[in-house]
Image 1 (cartoon, helix red, strand yellow):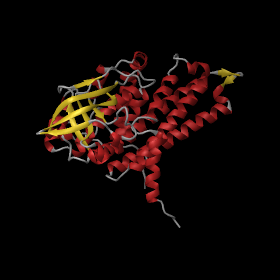
Image 2 (cartoon, helix red, strand yellow):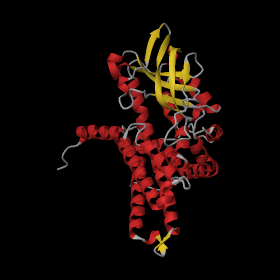
Image 3 (spheres, helix red, strand yellow):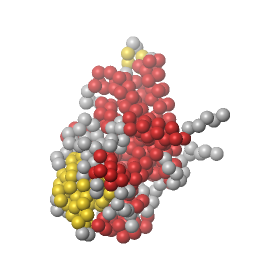
Image 4 (cartoon, helix red, strand yellow):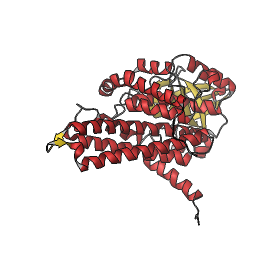
Length: 385
């Protein structure tokens, strides 16, 4: 039998995150969205609560949670502010390759200190010329004795201006495409590491997003994760784990938009009655509710598969594609329900719509998600009878 009840531990995580969102995130979300500043003090509080290290095993000081548990509490943080949530989340994306593929020495050297004191990590895969096609990356890593010399610029790096270290993907031979990619752990204080100014984005403005440049940066060979040539597989493995966490962020945004739209519809009077009594509005609200529930369940399945150690590339892509599209649709409909007020900064639904758009783009665009789904379908699907 399939059970849908949360365990007491999961309920406790959910309530803890909901409290944090209500008491810590929501009071400052509009301010950081407005001025585009990074809430560093809030990040430190989130680290203290364990939100930065859910997947890190307990022996290194982390929470030792699964992907499903992480998704359950992450929805609450994202419902408070997606820009703040993604800044918390991205350290998990950067840490996962170390958790999964790192040597014991690397785990002790990077995971334990990260958990014991406030730290931030970033994941450096995308480039100006290579977003959806990471195999065409131009950042190079050339072995020179017992060091790799790293050159290139990574783009759209969340927490790029604040990271203590970066997990960087680079190529040892551009001609080999994905087979030439390696994965390096790069401390941000190394000579030759720099970052650009924060990018002025449409939404998720509380997150710090920059370019990060590596100019003849010498990285000890012991900072190589795994072997040469398998960095692309590590990048994809990390995304399979973390795409459900981004998808649940979309669910959190959509839920907030639905709750606000429902409350407003019950108060707004037109033609002598609350607009919630008009069938046109009821249909919009009903679609919001059913779509959010469907997206959440698909996220939970993708996360559960990850926890079972089962390949979940298709389900993770399904979850992200569906949830991000639903978040965009729900937030747009919420603005519609608010009418003219929804198109102003007087109410938070316009922020939710701006925040939702990014989820259709980063961690794999909505179109790339469909390619992943279709390619796996073509390998799997046979006639049932």
